[in-house]
Image (cartoon, rainbow, N blue to C red; front, side, top):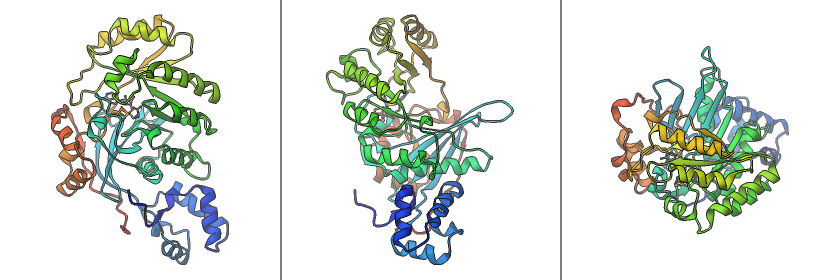
Length: 401
Ligand code: SAH
Ligand code: SF4
């Protein structure tokens, strides 16, 4: 990947913004003005930051600083209006999706508005039931491209008088395989002078990169961690997650313990339930035996059907699996499905993106991620169930490179 010739101001941590402002010979408060404008005003282009004198904006631009807001090329909203899937086109044409999930607090209020972000275009981990995994890997996203997904959702919410309360790194890609950019994005999202979320309101989900989990524990961040386990034994796990090592299950449970001990945050194990593959009561008992007495939490996710023929188990089987775990002394929840009919559940993003966007976008998508088209063809969602709200690019940066 070519390095950017210009630097997006959304990339800079507040301390870096201070240094930039000092370098340009401006007073310190200009950094605060700039940060406030970025994280409260959500400008689409640098020229919208009208709180800064035009001469300073011109100097920033001349020094190679920009605001490159991705274009929103498509938005789909679920029938209940609580889930929105945003398709964003990054500066090089790469398409990424993020999902905004809201939870009803009654009287039309949403006490929780969670954004699920992507960290890579595609993913190299190859999980057999995951649409992104079947696309293959295109490229890592930069921190500012991860932050931009949250800012896009925040902009949308602002129109309704609401704001982002939580961020989960559960979209396309493996966050811990793009470690430095993921951590930079987390710092931007949680810095009180930047986006300002509580660290505890951010959760990183990983397929289980053990060394990176240990590194994450040492960052001094209070992040939630979710580990995608999916199997109670190594043989089955390796079938579902082909890049998993031969000793993965025990290693992951040990890494989760260390993370919990260092950060004080409880780790969640995600388990995508697949009919006839990992949903048996014996498997539930084996999982309970592994996790008993560790204060672990298991989140069961009935799998979203994708290419490859993996199906979710019948409801009764999901509940039976849950019951066995609970009786085995393990905390367990079944993930509330959100946005299933718009294929907007986390972990199943952009699978049908190239089918419905205009042809220019389609071409960009094809360049961006080899193989996604194959997925689009196989995608199992029925068009009739979907209520699409197509909104052409609302925020297009004027200063494309
Ligand atoms: N790469 C990270 C984060 C992105 S995937 C990880 O694997 O954890 C986020 C979650 O979605 C993971 O738990 C993943 O297993 C799950 N997921 C992927 N495909 C899915 C599908 N088809 N149905 C349900 N969950 C899925
Ligand atoms: Fe990658 Fe996560 Fe999908 Fe596995 S489940 S292929 S790690 S995005």
